Length: 204
Image 1: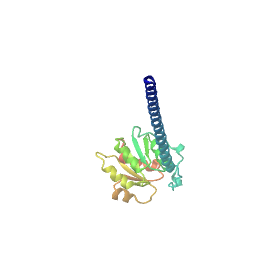
Image 2: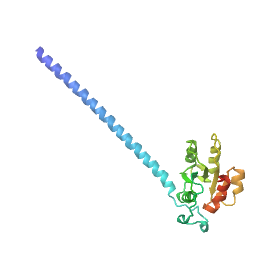
Image 3: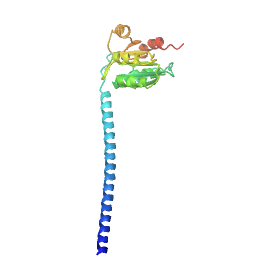
Image 4: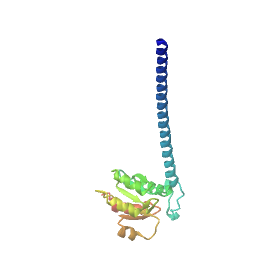
């Protein structure tokens, strides 16, 4: 009788151990699946955010209003007199900033682009060094004026900030009243840009 009781007790203990082990394996599997789901969710959110961000910059840009001033980008004269200098462009419209970027690169600049005023400010706060900054007048998340005011509050910030916009006949307002270092009307050309660069970034 004692052997029967012992045998039954042993079987019960073994069954309990098996149940505990199965539960442990089940919990580990659930944890693994939850991590996989979390990873997939994070990746999905990343691509969703990227899509939303990119969707905004592929809109057709109707800002270029002076078609007679525009020169095909492959016709730009390459004269890298500012080779080694870095420029930052703040603009959310791809066609618009492509023109400004190409003109700056034709003069030797290494060019970075920020798609929002927040991104532009953050790039400067990250101690990325630029010799000149071009900011749009209007962003989806603010204005060029607000962007400038934030930049000026950054310690030791002394980079020239140029407002580039299609708004006509407002140079006095942007430069004298709002405090930008220069104003340039879009579309940007070498002819418009060089006098501003000669003043703000003299070569000699």
